[in-house]
Image (cartoon, rainbow, N blue to C red; front, side, top):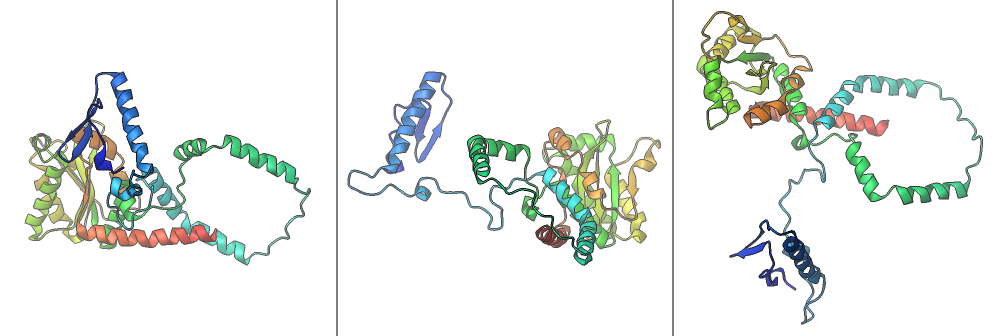
Length: 327
């Protein structure tokens, strides 16, 4: 029975308009239950051939699947917890390689003899108990509670926790500097009241100020952060040499806006000589709180930084995967 021959008339909670079929909320629980029963009965008929002997339509004809990226991993969700696990594995990669080399060159001791012979009947009983109690529902629950973070994700499945680390690494590799810029209350008020969103407005102020100072677009990445007092500020990295730090500071002060008093003026802009391995993840530590406050993700990077960061991550990801196979 083709899908377009469904009879939706008379089913509470289901309406059909032109080529669209949608379900709206019903005020009666009995109507909703009756609607689901009628709808499921008609759906079950799809598995049965029509009267003329024609086969049921293919699944792709009934509900076409959305287009997926060719490189996307199936059933893989973005997880900041998994990304932190990868960074910890990457940090420990040198020690693990040294340990493997030590074990390869050391003399292996003979394997001890088995103290007893396994009982085949006992093994079968154990397998039967596992099959009885370790049901697919239980396995699914355990997988959700204890996800497998062994395989690092592809770049497109990474969260800002992982991407910001490699954004800053690409900035440091190019001789850039980390930065923090605070904004005046007037600038923050205008940004929060803008239809573009607070993060977009503040990021564009930094971008325009750097371009005005250097006469060209500067590559940088930034993340919107919030302090304990609820004050918004931007931090990240800029591809600019330490010799140009005075010009960078001047541009960031212009982006931050004019302060009404001198108190705390020196803290408006901070520029470091280089960013260590933890600067990127530090900048996005409050990313979820920022998203809830301003309604935006609050992270951005120039295309050049994105491309280089993806290449750096791909190299490290391959090293971690190779180390896992050798372990």
